[in-house]
Length: 298
Image (cartoon, rainbow, N blue to C red):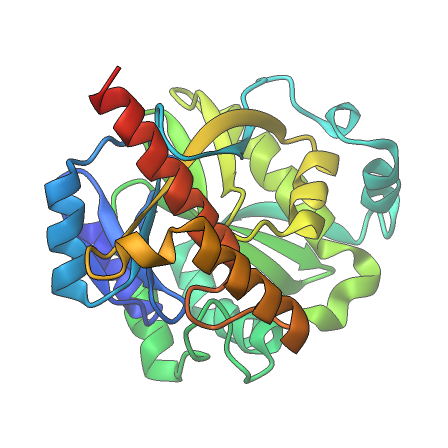
């Protein structure tokens, strides 16, 4: 996974490499497994070593039988098209029809045209927990993407101007969107609708591609983003999302009493607590511990 880790690092993430999975530092104190929809079953001792070594408080990952119910969003039907989407989504696809087009981007095009979209999308404020890339940083990202087998870029154009892109990675028949940016100045043309639809339609027809995914529900869930994916024709597939806490904090952070107190405090201050992003992570960790205990002591 070294090549994929290199790409993730160019986005400003710290990455902890393992043979079959990479762990990316997200938010203030968490780790998340990448690719985000890969089902893994790491040993508890390995997770503990990872958390101790990284200094992070929580690690989240998709597993077969632990944690909380979640959703992965997939297109698996080679016949996917406009009729696969919901009515309002189709209406947005018809908006500015003839002026908006979606097609693969060469890496030279991506290198030349993509930075302005990236900067417009983030507005100089930064997103995904990392800063807006500099010109040199953008060059490093493009080099890493081009060097990563299975990585491609898909662009959405309004007339002749790039309005958005998705960078995806295909491995073992699964194509996953890894990075997406949309320039807000093109919002009237609905580039996000065109881009997600065109990306999925193009990729699912590729030989050897058995599914196209735009990720899973996050902790905490982002209901508006999940609704957009559903309207775009991505189908929900049930998964289990596990969370494991650092051994030093595991016992008290996953207790019902502490979680209740944190939830009350979170409600009182009117915003999510920064410690783990949301008490939902602690709830997932408590469920993961309970599932593990049940498995170990049937």
